[in-house]
Image 1 (tube, rainbow, N blue to C red):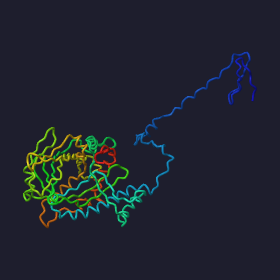
Image 2 (cartoon, rainbow, N blue to C red):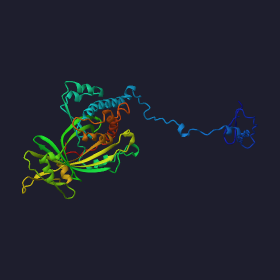
Image 3 (cartoon, rainbow, N blue to C red):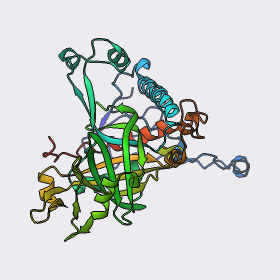
Image 4 (cartoon, rainbow, N blue to C red):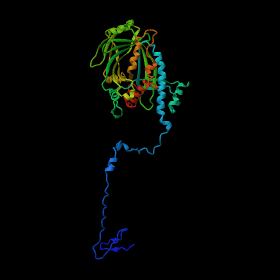
Length: 419
């Protein structure tokens, strides 16, 4: 390597590797590096290249692969756990179809009114052993536990959902991801009914009167033909699918009850119900009088219905006060107080249910049956077992109710009067 020279600037310069030899002189002006010469661009004909190009079939953005790195150290889920939800859904569907299939077979010969509905509420267990409460039970072990001879506990279902109107409005306005509405905001129908729960020689009767037309309907035996309870351990609310039968009686064949209906007079202030009636039969008593205000909303989300039209039924229930008139013998008055007072006295609440429209319309054939006849519909037709393995009716109802239950954990938090 050639030796370095000291210039006037105090910078040491040495020969650049591979550069041409430069003669240095101490008397010359300090040297600077000479810029490189740019080579002339090659003359390339791009016409051939342009002709070979083609339009992209996929946009550039779609060719990117977005990878989430937040859970990159998280262990992969076990393959045995990925199908647990699907196995549980199939198991529940099979159990529901088996239970209701036999119930519909029996209901074909039922003379009267038949209604299939799914109610929101809470499932309560009584006399549950402590060893069952303390241990973790998998869903596969539940059937064995219920079938064991040691199981002595009972279950009940309460359908009181809330005592506040804002909870009902929240439920009506439920939305899923992306702002999809679950129910139609405008109700498709409204109905008000007065129900007199009567006791005649230890036999229960229900006198129902339409609030608009004042047409009476007398119900006799009310039978819960079948019921399937669905518990949601991780949620605040459960639901229950009921098949209920009501015997419709001719009110003209019951003169004492007909006398009550003929004596009813309705009045009221500020929209509050106020009734007066007379009770002459000594063996007949009025246990309570309920006023039910019902609104129906259509389920509009098709992907949850799976082709089964359904409606949301929300009902406001008021239990009226009953007092005897001191001036007029055998005359009674039934009235409602302000809603805050009714709420504090546990006489006001709301219920909610989902009903399949086409199925209940089909079940109305039982109103026209004669003695010994059976309806033309079949259990396969009602449960839609021929459309898909596992049926379509019950899974569709469970889909809608599961979406509702997953979003109403805070509903009913003020039900202090019913605790």
